[in-house]
Amino acid sequence: MSENENPNARSIELSRVATGHYTARNAAGAEIEFGQGEGLLSPVELLLAAIAGCSSIDVDTATSRSAEPTKFSVTASGNKVVDDIGANRMDDLNLSFNLAFADDADGRKAASMVERLVALSHDKYCTVSRTVEHGTPVASSVAVATGDEG
View 1: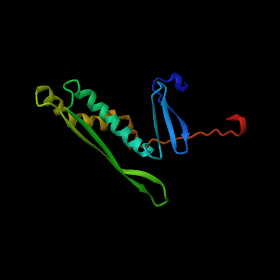
View 2: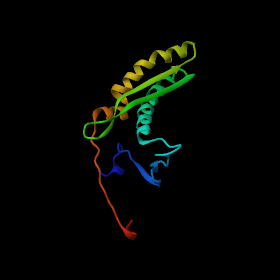
View 3: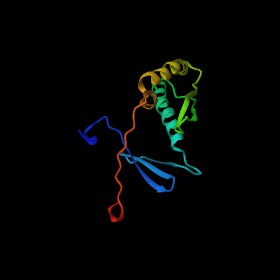
View 4: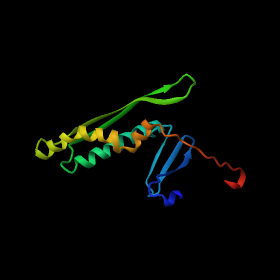
């Protein structure tokens, strides 16, 4: 079954803008620029944003059914580690949710759900953090051309 036939497939296409500057685009045409340099998120920062965003969507979707938050801020953090063979990775990843709701019945209902929703996102629903924790292998394929072939 090709990726186009698989309803569970997800992909982006990355294009080079300049040295160290890239655009990622999904099938719907949404795009984000990133890379190295002023005004750009780094790939590691995008990873942290993806983890925070995934769990935030889970929490926001459920709590907003009861009440709109008056504050919704999530910090994703971690430490860059270089291991004994010089390989880079992130360690001690952490999400810190800072939410507030109105002090009324709907706001208190939404607030009472947050801890459970954060746990459910971590344990079951957030594809991004669950993939990071699972340690899914990343495969590569390469096609290189010279001259007018590219």
